[in-house]
Length: 207
Ligand SMILES: Nc1ncnc2c1ncn2[C@@H]1O[C@H](COP(=O)(O)OP(=O)(O)O)[C@@H](O)[C@H]1O
Ligand SMILES: [Mg+2]
Image (cartoon, rainbow, N blue to C red):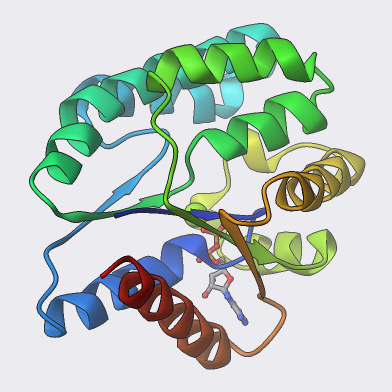
């Protein structure tokens, strides 16, 4: 089972995952959390380039390609082998982030971006993708209160994040079977409970 969490800045992806992992492990599942970009030595080095606030001149195509380079490495080195062993992999972002940010956000050609993503992942699609959806300004405010995490990808104008959110919601419409939307403007504990319910529900259906 391959589960991905998506959503704009401050939607709660990074803070929810460790608790979900602990919960599922207590239930006896073997769970491996990972994050994008990153999760391997090569991918973490690429992450540093992508997030460095000094790299303000980075072109959208450069950015798109660097994400795919980081992604192909984690898919081959980590995600595929873990899934092959029957583990649950939970990723903090995956290729839908590229379609949302580089596609809708930077307004790159969506078909070209989808082709790159397919190449980078060798077609590996999540079984379940959860969109933590919230008003982008609420999310950015949360993120700003947590300044240690501020990076180049948090530093766009607010309309960029509005396009990202609209893009995510469009992607949900296009693939309603894979996506579940959770309202992350709720209290953190309520979001956590809903995430547990959604994931356990999916695990039961898949057996
Ligand atoms: N539902 C929530 N209510 C209030 N604060 C939240 C909620 N979800 C997340 N936060 C806070 O917002 C900040 C960003 O959350 P984080 O999990 O890092 O989001 P993301 O990884 O999606 O950018 C953190 O300080 C986190 O504690
Ligand atoms: Mg995060």
